[in-house]
Image (tube, rainbow over all chains, first blue to last red; front, side, top):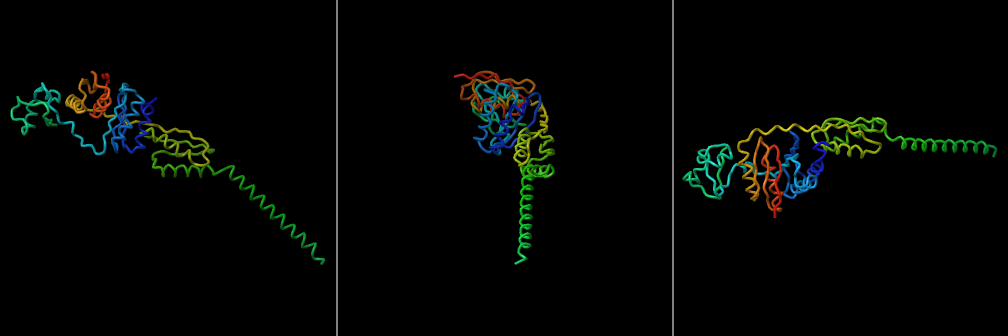
Length: 124
Length: 174
């Protein structure tokens, strides 16, 4: 059974509830990338996914559906947690502490002093 | 008076012809309804139906009232939609669905040095304390344990980061 056959009912549901999507497949994973008209529509797809693959264990589907015109790019901020320092945060993104410091001069006055809860811009 | 018998014969003849016509018409109607439309008509109707249902890239051939669908599509739902569409046409006896589903190959995501940060941030935003993500070759392995109500949102969050694959070993806690 192909992955599209396995997850066909999710696609049927998407057609019904007005979710637009594109499909691709690689290394045994089906990617459904799309945009749903509402949170409910998105949730319907996730419920169906959970029905086909309880607890999402198979690892053969990436369901990436945003709602409406998602803001996007929101992933490139980082919220400081207790115990973080710029070097540690930089390592997560593969950049230097200095790059983060430079991008956040407006909120960081001293690179050794960052506070939990601060939202840092992560330069691309 | 002596003309009457002739008239009678004439009248009878007219009646007979009339009856014959009726019989022929009846036979014709019966014959037509039994045979239905020709294959060519059905094929035309089927292609028009597909166009009306905005299904493109699929062709239909009809022979002996059997419709054969062919063509390539990226999406399996097009395959079933096309079949349902053509099946609804009066006179189509059965369908041979030879539509080929070809999923486009996913371009493997370029190595994303930011992936760890993005995944961590997504988990944090979704309130997934207790979940831990490790990344290896673009595969996100999710371990740890989150509250049952947080389980699905945590998986969703990771799906929406743009990783190539998720190895989900996350547990549901209390």
